[in-house]
Image (tube, rainbow, N blue to C red; front, side, top):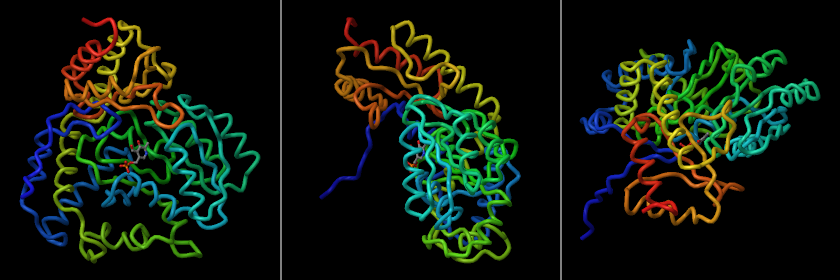
Length: 374
Ligand SMILES: Cc1ncc(COP(=O)(O)O)c(C=O)c1O
C-alpha cells in the first residue's frame, strides 16, 4: 500500500514558491463549498477587492485566474493580441522570452527589444522601437525578471507606451506585494502575477487585472480568442456580475481560501510596510553576502530586493552546494537558468520568507557550505 505523502520541512528561499504561513495552510484546510454558493461568491468579491489594493488599481476586471502565473501570461496575450498585431516585447531574461513565444503563437508580429541578462529594460531602446514601429499596438515587458533579479522601471516604460498609443502588458509575477506596483499610475493595461511569490500563498493561482482600454480592445476583436479556457469574454460571466454568475469552470475553492487569507495578511501588514520589509531584509542579506565576498549579478539601482542573484565563487561546484543546503539544512535556493546556469545562485526573500530568521539561517548555511568554512 502506498503511504500518505508527508513533505519534508523546508525553508524556501529560491525564486518561488516562498514559505507559506500556517495561517494560510489552515485557511486552505477549511471545508470545501460549492463554487456557485453565495458564500463563495462573497469570498470572490473580497478577493477581487483586495487584489485591486495589491495592484494599486481601480480596474473592475481584477481577479485570480484558476491556474499558475503562466496562464495569467497567456490570458493577456491571447486576448490582447490578434493575428497580425505588431507587439514590441522586451527580452532581458527567461520570462521576456516566454512573452515572445506567446506573441508568436497568437499570430502577432513581434518587435524584440533585447537587453543583456541581468540588466533592466533600457527605456531608450523601447522609445527607439516605437519610433521605428509607430503602428505597434501592444507593448510587453517583465517588471521583475526572476531569472536574473533585475527590476525594470514600470512607470517610465508604461508612459512611453501610452505616448505611442499602445496597450501595455506587464508581468509582475515576482513584484506584486514585494516592490511597488502601481497599475493605474503607470498606465498599465494588463498585468498578471502569481500566488506563490511575495503573496506567500501556495502556487497555482494567477491574479490578473485589465483596464477599460484593454477590455475595449478585446470586445472589438474580429477573430475569436483561440483559447476557450482563457477567453476573457467567457470568463467575465463567471468573475464579474456577482448577482448573475454563470458556470464557466469549477474554481479551485480551497486555494482561493488560501489566496484570500494571504491578501488579508497583506492588508493587515499594509502594502507599503510589506515593500519596506522586503527592502530591509534584502539590505541585511546583502550586508552578509558582501561580508563573505559574494558579488551581486545586478547593479544596485536595478536590484530586486526579493530576488538576490549572486555569482558562484570561482572553483565552487554550485549544484553540490545547493544539494548540501537542501540535504543538510533543508534550505532551498535557486540555480541560474539559461546562459546563467551553473554561474549564479538566486536567493529569494519573498513574502513570508522575507524575515530576519531566514536571512540569518541562509547566511549561516551558505557559510558552512563554501570553501574556507570550518
Ligand atoms: C517573472 C515570471 N513570470 C512568469 C512566471 C510563471 O509563473 P508560474 O510558474 O506560476 O506559471 C514566473 C515563475 O517563476 C516568473 O517568475
